[in-house]
Length: 249
Image: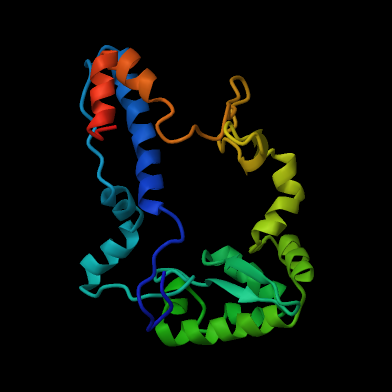
């Protein structure tokens, strides 16, 4: 999301492809479930790249429909709730805060030593807090508090009060993080071509009875052509040779 007044930004990954793939996996499971129940046979699944992403913007589209105004860039905030933002700490690190529901906000006010904010008419409810002017004031108050303390102290205070705050980690910090290690969030596996050991994210869904695992990090481009075209699709060796000659594969 762009900063207010800034140019539109793109996610630093192939977000549409990844989200569409996740939706496709879910759709396949739903289709197979219906088939097993005998409700229907096979069916075509039609998923675009944009619609799964569009679904994630449901609240923003609804806000436009109700108000007639398109939501504007808000950086790390949300247009329909506050506070929810990233703040720099005294030791130069960053923390992500989400305290937009009423009880978390009230806990936050106590945590930062500003209980009077709970009764301040500018911040008393979420509707008050998302007002453009009130949002700026609240962000300044929170930014000043975060900047006055080191990250570890902030995490300790907020954890004790039940306020949702987390550190924004670099890849180096993730690599050393105790929680990631204990959860087996990454694994080491050999590259099938170079035999170099690679460290990659593990399967993100943990099944207790049938745990999944990554067998290899991926094959070289075209390595499975013979299996796919000949064994699965039934093309002859001669046909495959012609496909290669004319550049089809």
